[in-house]
Each structure stands twice: as structure tokens, then as C-alpha cells.
Image (cartoon, rainbow, N blue to C red):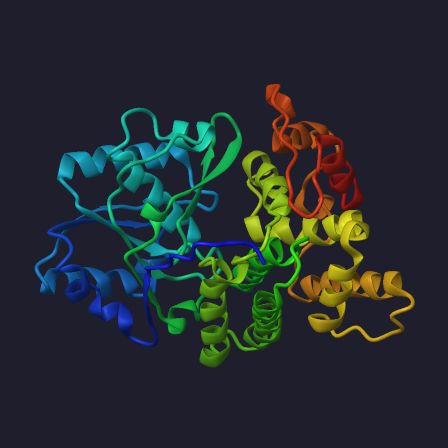
Length: 392
């Protein structure tokens, strides 16, 4: 186990009806907030009305900015920064899923950043200050409600980059499983794939003596898989959504990755799909992850045997570890298929023509500064291209 510094200050208010308290919760923290959200779904569901009523009743003034799209756009972030400065906003309230929360975090940084906020993502420039962010989660997936991470798409350059800082962890987040009832099954599927990937990126490691976090990862993965199928059968199953909502937070608040080297290659590869083809993040991860497993398992066969047995329930002779591993990968691909997720890039509408370009962008080779991605196995652009082609 490696040394670590675990810091997770986000306050999570979990349960039915908690969103109605948002005004009283924000009153001590802010006099004016930016209400940041996506399309019209929160208005159709009545959530917008409940939130704005709570803010007004508590005397919290607010400006608002809607229009967040999946793979949140830099152009809207620029608009939000200007609005916050104009209106004197002192906290951002994101109502939505990971896209709305990530966009809110980017705006929160940009209000104080001297320059174009894209430079923070593109060049890794440090930030010294950010507006506080609070969230009301409507889609369990990204885990952004408790993490210090944010991902933004520069639509003009067709680039999607992430950034992380402790300053970006939300001060409080409300998770009400009942708010998930109206989600389409496609968003359930993509959200579960995203949450599972957050665990996979931490679980598959070369670090030894990580019994506790191994177990936490495995329990989280099994919880996600079991309850994804339950929720898919009954999209109003409160208990299943509660398990998924809590698991999504645990998957990405940092806990399951403590004391272990992490990977993150699949996320790096998927960002290229989202940036160019606007693919749903979870859908891209569900396609790429089994292919990545097939490509890298020989570099740490024991880790993949453990996954196949402890998570996927594979039985067999340990004298034939390859058979156990391949069965585990096959079962994962089958699970994603049950949720309606594609096993191939062609199923996502992605052809052969830009695979090499994406592989070179993912590793930096396209910009003359290749940095291999991944922790368990270092992947150069040729490796990434091979994985893309495995699942094409």
C-alpha cells in the first residue's frame, strides 16, 4: 500500500425530499447564487419550481444559466463566468448530473482565474481560488457531486480534458433517489458504466497489499451491477436507485483508490470519442473497457483473475488462469449488453477513419509530446490504436 492523503469534505444530504431544504442550507453561505442546469427536464419534473421556491423562501437571490449539454461545452462556461462577475454571484448551485456539475466547477474556477479558463485544462495551470459549488444530483453517474474533478469539452478544437483540485469539491450535495425515476433507461445504462469505470480505474493496479480497498472496489462493483438490473426492470424502484446513487458517490470521492496506483487509461481513450463524436461518456467506456482488459491482462494476470472470481463470479481451475480471465471479460461485456450498451465502436457510429488521430491525441503524440497513459500498463499511441481496433 502506498502513502495517501484522503480529504473528502463534501457534505452529502441523502434521501427523499432533501432538495426542498436547499434554501435554508445555502442561506448561511451565500447571498446570491448562480442556478446552473441543463435543459427543460428539471422544469417538467417540478424540481426547478421546488428549488427556486426554496431559495426565495429563504431570501437567497439567484441568477440562472441553463443550457448545459452532455460533454459540457467551454462556450457555456465562458458565458457563465461573465454572468457570475456581472451579477456578483458568491456560490454556484448545479442542478443536474455530472455535466451540469462539471460546468459549474469550471465557471467557479474561471471567476477568479486571470486568463482563459481553458488554459487550466489544457496546460494544467494551478488555481488558487474558486467559488463554492453546491449540487442537487439528478443523474447518478459521474460522481462529481463529491469529487474535486471536472471535465470540459472545447467544441471548437474537438478536445475534452479534465482537471482536479481540492478547491472544487462541492461544499454540499443533495442526493434524492426519487429524482432519478424519470431518467431514460439509456441514461441509467451510461451512468452505471461510468460509475463502474471510476472503480475499474482504481481497482486494476500493480500495487500490492491493498486488501481493504480491493474489497471496497469489489463490493461497489457488485452493488452497481445488481441494482442496475433491478432499476432497469422497474425505473421507479427507490431502493435500487438509492444503492446506485450512494455507490456513485463512493466510486468517485477518492476512497476506493486510496493507497494504490491508479490507471485512467480508459478515460483518456474515451475522452477522444466524446470530443470528436459527442458520444455519451458511459457508452464509450462500456465499449472500450473490455477491449482494454483483453489488451493488458497479461501484465498482471493475478489482478484479472481476482476480478473474474470476486466480481464476475467465474469458477474454474486456477491452473487455467487465462480461461478464468477471458470468461470474466466476456461476462462484463454481456452485462453491458443487457443494459443496451454497444460492444463496438461501429455501434456508436464511429468508423475507422479517425482512430489513429484519436490514439495520438489521447497520448499527446499528436502535439509532439507523447506521454503514455495508464498505470497498470503504459500505453503509447500504437497501443491505444490497437485497443480501438479490438473493439471497432
